[in-house]
Amino acid sequence: MPLEALKTRCRGCALFDTAIGPCCIAWNAQAIVAVQLPEANPASTRARLVRCTGPLEDGEPPPFAQAAIEGVQSLMQGGSRDLREVPLDMTGVPDFHQRVYAIARRIGPGRTRTYGEVAQELGDKALARAVGQALGRNPFAPIVPCHRVLAANGRPGGFSGGSGVLTKLRMLAIEGTSPSGTLALFD
Image 1 (cartoon, rainbow, N blue to C red):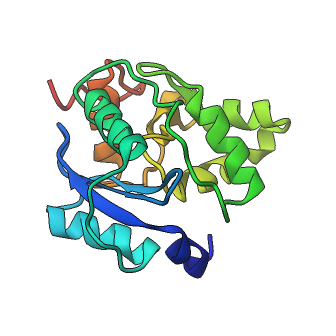
Image 2 (tube, helix red, strand yellow):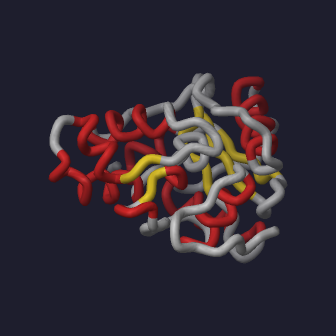
């Protein structure tokens, strides 16, 4: 997504605590524009979000953003919220990515699909790599739960949020699932 388009859409942001660390969320008047999973510390988390959005004022989240924060917090504590009700501003998000994100949003907590299965739903299993690339650019994790999409044979695959694959595995463990061939790291 062009940086300038994202910068002009944001109204404010807020850091918030979760069971996996501090996240940051940005919004405009109607919808969530971006979410950042935890980095090494709160300042790093906010800084990574702002690299994508441009400078933002910290602010009091409007009701829809507060509901999104509470949903993410619940999910990161093992709740079964699917967060599909959270409004997302997809302005500037490529059509293909939007289609991938719509499929990912239908994957409920504790469930997983593979990149190939998402690609097949899009009409061509050969799109699996493009699905992974789209999920790697997901600005809405975990509202768009890209952590629930795995590589072939149930392997974790990649993850661009937070501490990479370790964050993905931790989020899956919180939801009560783990990819094939991985140990439960966070009992």
